[in-house]
Image (cartoon, rainbow, N blue to C red; front, side):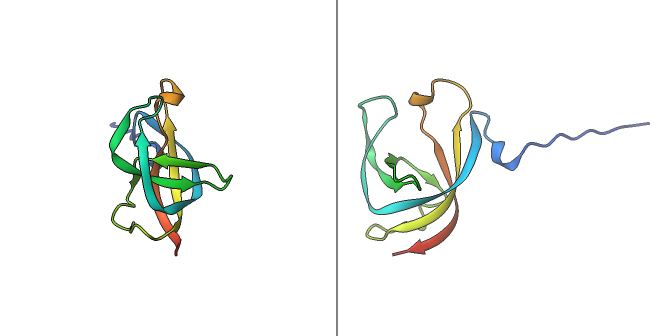
Length: 107
């Protein structure tokens, strides 16, 4: 008799270094700003997205997975994202990751 056990992981936890935290609605402002690597004063050569969460906290993030092809500078967006936080390590040295889910509005 042969038994086959197949394990599966939650869709949200596919990356070993980051874990799913929540699904959130954020605003992406119409311009990009200088992005500094987390926990440092080192500026990236690339600009980052300026986002505002539902608690009105403004931050600059380097990347929103799946959003680059939609974003046009000069437009504000209200989007739904999945938020992933670092699974290990010092929280302040790793930024959260964002994965685009859907577009609510574009102004």
